[in-house]
Image (cartoon, rainbow over all chains, first blue to last red; front, side):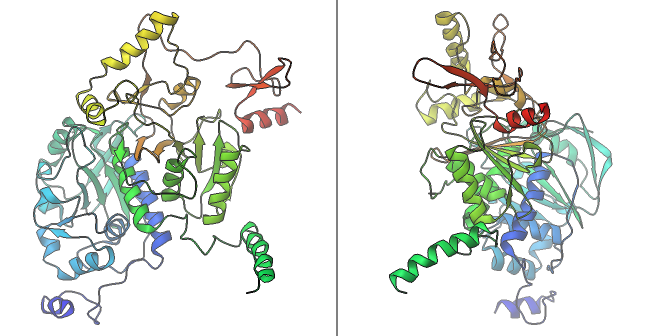
Length: 211
Length: 300
């Protein structure tokens, strides 16, 4: 049934109706991807390259898919931006490999995949945790066309020796102001991981941003 | 299989493990199942994003008792990969029981390369010391933590300590340090000396001697803390400000010794007092065995 639905929607299934394959070696590939994610989160704004050969359903990129396969499971309600949610192959892929429930409301999501940054909802619509449990907050995987750390906004804070610059292409207007507000609510807030074609960078709530 | 054959099979299996023939096939890589690793990995990402905040996690039963570093072992098991080089220390020593057994655990379950040389390790799991040699950005320091909550002995209720962290209400901790001064004339806390991370959370650096506190400040390596029995993970990202609590008129300072290490002669390291006989004989030697051995080698 799932295959029939997906075909009707004209999605890019691999002809068999089955979801695209996940990691060849889930244990070691998710470990390798996690170390990238941990490294990115520990050094905000630092761009780490990820060369992955993953066959993933559009509009997901291999970096985003690898991050999702590494972090998601039945414990992590996932929100998809409307563009991603409209591709049934993507939802099937993530649910098949990770078992994560998909949620409609941003506030109920532990993770969110935003395949098109233009569709990024306001950051404060996601769970920011509470002052007593700030860890009960969302992590956003935001796909961006390009990352550049030689220019852009100036980042300071834990994980950064003095300062770090970062530019991500395609973010909506007013995004960096929202990031400043997100930081101002520390320890509450959301954490972001930017996924470009072959690169990732992270922006935790602890980072101060100077536009 | 006869009993004799069974007995014969055991040493063979052991030999295969020792020969570095790959991780023990009876276990998942690094022992933990993948769902547990994901849960711990997510907790660690939040811990890094909120420096010094203790993230609750569903600590698992490990094949060693609580108090033997199960928190650190779970953290290491969730980050370690085949390319890592692991060093394990117990009070600075590579060759004491806890360090040896944890190192063997990872040799068996991951078959990674292990080392005693601080600079060669990509992951260093530690019980109660920070290596004397400065760490780099490419390294991760994993601490085994018994009691993660610095306020626990001042306020036993978790609901209250959570509120105190949420409100930044840390007066009680300063009162404790003040009482030290009132009783002893100086701050008598010598280990598990409370620190403030990035100007926000007060954190227990685990029972490291306060001698090691300055090394945490702006350390280039990522520091991860795992408390297995208490089910908490916390972290300090690289280059993060870590301030040891003190008073203007009683500034923080570290232990000093009157004599150098009796083995290598170092004067800038943390020394252990070793009892040598039953007639009051004792000697002071470096607690960091790798540092001490290498200093001797350099001298020779």
